Amino acid sequence: MTACHAIRPLLPARVDELTLPEVRTRAEHVAACTRCAAEAAAYTRLGQALSAMAGFEVDPADGTLERILVAIGRRSVVTGPRVLAAAGASGALVATVVVARAVRHRRQVRHRQLLRSILRRPRVGRFHLPSLPAPTPALARAK
Amino acid sequence: MEVDRELVEAAQAGDRWALEELVRRTHRSVYTCALRLVGNPDDAADVTQDVYLRVVRKLGGFRHEASFSTWLNRVTTNVAMSTLKRRTRRFAVEGAAVPADTRDPAPEPAERAEAVALARRLEALVAELPEGQRQVLVLRDVYGQSTEEVANAMGLTPGAVKVRLFRARERLKATLEATEGGQVVALAGRRRATGRRS
Image (cartoon, rainbow over all chains, first blue to last red; front, side, top):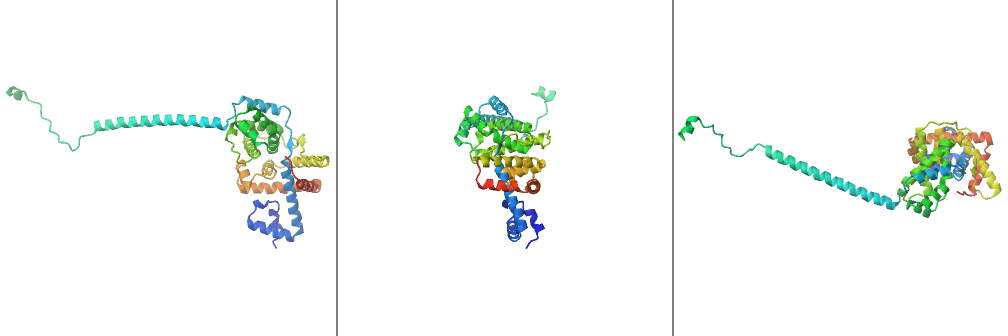
C-alpha cells in the first residue's frame, strides 16, 4: 500500500483534477486507511459546502441597483440579433465599397505604370537607321 | 439564480423592460460573486455595474449554448479579474467581505437558520484566505468552473491553479477543524444532501 504521506497531496483534489493512476492509487489507499478515509470524507463535505454557497446571495448596498439601471439606461439600445445583423450587413457593404475602390485605384496605377514603362523602354530588336550627319553648307548648295 | 430564456430573448430583442427585469433578478448573484472575488463591497458594486454594461454590449452575441447564469458568471469573473489587475485592494479582507445580509433559499425555518449560519461562517472563512487562493477556490469550488477556465480567467497555468486550490482547501479545512471541530463541514454535507435551491 502507498504510504500516507504520498497520498496526502491527493486527498483535497477532486477526481477530475487527478490523473487516472492517481485516482486509482488514492481509492486503494483510502479503502485500506481509516485516517486518510476520514480526511478524504472531510474534503468531500467541504467541497459540497462550498458548492452550496453558490446558492446564497448577498444584498448590495442601497442604491446599487438604481445606479446600475441608470448606467445601462445611458447606453444605447441592446445590440440584439437583428441590430447585429443590420450592423454586419452595413459593415460588409462599406468594406466591399472600400475594397472595390482600392482595387480600381490599384488597377489605374498599374495601367499608368505600364504605359510609362512602354514609352520609356529602349527599342530592342528593331532596325534603326544610323542618324545622318547634318548637311554641310557645300552639300546644301549643291542640292 | 435561474433566468427564463424568454426574458433573455426579449432583452436581446431590445425590450428595455426585459433588460431591467434581468438586472433586477440577477444583480444580487452577480454582486455576491464579485464580492467573493474582489474582497470588498465598494469594488464589488463597481464590478457589478461594469458587468451589466458589458452585458448590454454583449447580450446580442449570447447564443444560449450555455445557461444565462453560467454566461453571466463568466462575464463577472472576467470583469472582476480585469478590475483586480487595475486596482490594488483598498481594504483588508477581514471585516469587509462578511456579508451584511445573507439570503437563505432554504424553506423550513430550522434549516433556514442553519443554512444562514453556515453561509455566514463559510463566507467569513473563505474571505480570510489569501487573495489568490480565495479566487481560485471561489471560481472552482463555489461556481464550479473547470481548472482550465479558472487558469484562463486568472492568467495562470492549470498546474498553478491546482497548487493554489490544494493550499486553499487544506487551509480552509484546518481552520474549520480548529474553530468548529469540523461541525460546519458536517452541516454543509447534510444541507447538500437535502438539495439546493437557487
